[in-house]
Amino acid sequence: MRPPIFPLLELLSFLQALLYLLYHCHRYHLVHLPSSVVGVLAQVYNMHTMQSSPPSAGPDLWLEPLTMKTHLNDFHEMCADEKACEWSSLRHTQNLESSKKLMENTFTSTRQAPWLITCAIMSSKYPAPDTKGGCCTKMIGCVRTTRASPWGLSVGYKIRSDCWGKGYATRALQLFLDEYWSQRRTAPKSDIYVAQIPAVNAVAFDKSLTGKIVNDRAQLRHVSNDEEDGDGDDIEITHLIAQVDPNNVGSMRVAEKCGGKFVTISEKSVKVWRFEEKRDMAVWKLDKPLKRV
Image 1 (cartoon, helix red, strand yellow):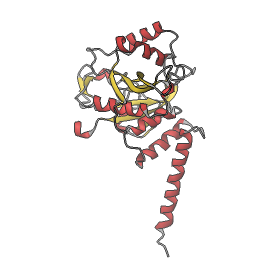
Image 2: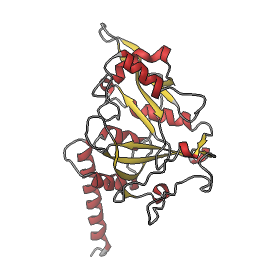
Image 3: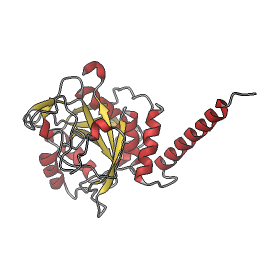
Image 4: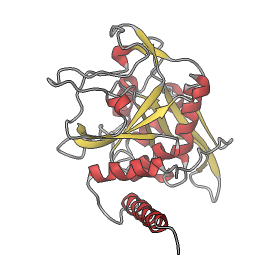
């Protein structure tokens, strides 16, 4: 006769398998689940360490600083790609001049803010035009640190749509993280954390990130090396934040494969250009490796 605990373990294994099945059915658009449910499933998925190992770099893919002189035309092709921009806050551009202004105003790194870095994702295997099976070197996307959030400095990534499904975004984000954490990064606290209270009914799991919401909801206590520091004091950046629409299953998978830890669903927090109302966002935390802290 088997000990009574065995049926319980079998039941837990069955429930775990069922949760994994639901999560993957949502990722591949087989079922549609509410954002809060997706958040719970993602958290369970992370807890059982079923993430793939980060991919290794290769000579066919690398990062380089984004510059107007080198990358403008390829940058325009990416920004004019409506499908590539379907989950972005900014809609696709209509002409080269619009893309140029966007690069100048939003995507250019400056010495005044060295914690904000923008990299072009380069591939040597992009199909060359007017050739049969030939390849050329081309910028196929970009990855960058973007703006402050209630949870820390955000990171974003975008790949032109004809390069989707090849693992480029995952590899590029991992390359970016490796480079970003290769040195100590600091920034004024006000440029890392924004004083914004997340939605009260958001599904939060990592209390060290979302902090403590006081009764009057007038203040959010953020994570930093010294929580008593003033907003103008520099603090060390020890993690980056990826905010991803739960329905953007490709980007959800990228954050997951690069070691992201699911934190919460922040409700109605980001305006995606093709939707009238703000969208719920899944918040992922990408930690600096402990050996480099």
